[in-house]
Image 1 (cartoon, one colour):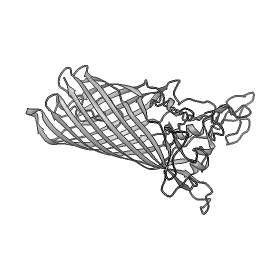
Image 2 (cartoon, one colour):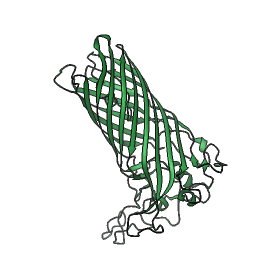
Image 3 (cartoon, helix red, strand yellow):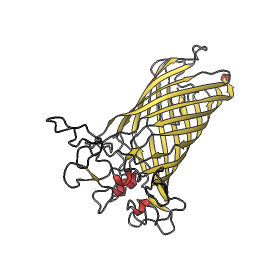
Length: 442
């Protein structure tokens, strides 16, 4: 079946359905599909609390409960897939976000008088409701932040793939495909301005990315085991993107690279080739490795609110030029350095071919995330000692420290949240994904 219902980013055919896409025996074909996807992610946000009463100063850094996060996104993706030859195909996809909402609430047992986010002034004591920024939330409401409902387009996805082996042509071999997909940033960049929260409801990141993948599948009787490997990395950022290199001691300024391993098995519950009727059940799992980089975390809008250089007494305002006397105010962009972590997904999909040119699919996936820091910026880079006559790219003091007021400092480092003992961590992360797809071919 040539179905394209993905659990990850929309890809050039095979990454979305490794079992059969691209295996058409005709010299040319065109497939169009529409996919709906709903994802709901939840996590608990805790805060490192160095020096907390009753803790061992020589033990692990203690943490305290703070917030619960919920992120819900609805995406509709129209897709076009066209064969260039019997083994080569191209795809075009437009993942359109029709709704994206984020909410933060007090964790059970935490009140406004004990939340470090509120006590440190990152949010007002009444919370911040982007729909009603002047009033916050009513007494008794556990919510402390609600962002605007966002919508729009981040990237246009253009892919190219090739089938190196095809079981339909040679039953003794598996179907093996390789491909690449370019994510071309076209959407307005998502920003948050507490002075005008409705002024930006975009979802774009302003990042151009490359996605490489390979897939292998082989049908044996009524079952078809498969696996895939993929890697995605940023290659270029737009000037309007929040991912800007501030220079000096900046590190890990780009979005995280990602690697994925996916495997599973599809079994035919009903297979009547003479009538072009087939129903398959797919059980699969995936492991995503997300490497350290700057990203839109659970608290990105809170950091942007608390770091607005145009607001009075904003606690997270950055210093754009650490070597100049005094603070050169720079608004915190909201994105922060996020620690390496893993996502594990388990999916159940049902795929049905109903006639020669029409297919339907439905998918449910449970996702678990490993615990990780979401404020993980380095203080800077310790430069080598200056040699005779050298004045730039080195340090006058010969030490292993990041010297304040020098070019060793990282302008994106906010000690209130990035310093060990004060960092935010995302724990108990989980998600649920539901998807539906309809596809026609001709």
